[in-house]
Amino acid sequence: MKKLKLSLAATLAVAALAGTWGIQTLNAQQPGLTRVPLQDVELTAPGRHAVQARAEFGPGGEVAKHTHPGEEVSYVLEGTLQLEVAGQPPRMLKAGEAFSIPAGVVHAAKNVDKGSTKVLATYIVEIGKPVTTLVN
Image 1 (cartoon, rainbow, N blue to C red):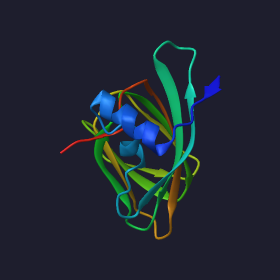
Image 2 (image 1 turned 120 degrees about the vertical axis):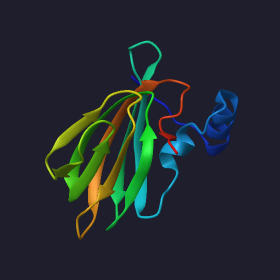
Image 3 (image 1 turned 120 degrees about the horizontal axis):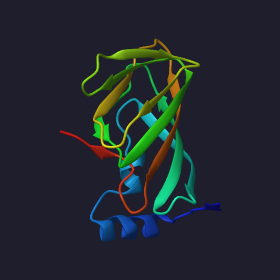
């Protein structure tokens, strides 16, 4: 498997050509949330890549409603996360618990712990599409 590294200029060019925010949307910071990119790997499945990041939520930190053009498979490393998935009641996930979100499903998450909450997130998504799209 090949590790994909893009300069900021190349990333912006790809996003502009695709007409989307591209990887910037994944990295767009929201108050109380930091995403640390770990790897972006082209897969043997045609047209797919895996993007892995560590999401670090400060106290009260959250990520607004959004979708992904593929599956999200995540694991709570530390703290407690409130996960809201369209059509489901909110769930509380503690360190050591995993969750997955199907492609295109609207969801949001919030740290409900007094300290920080960290999540290891892996996105199996279509190449050329933004990893994350915010929903109004």
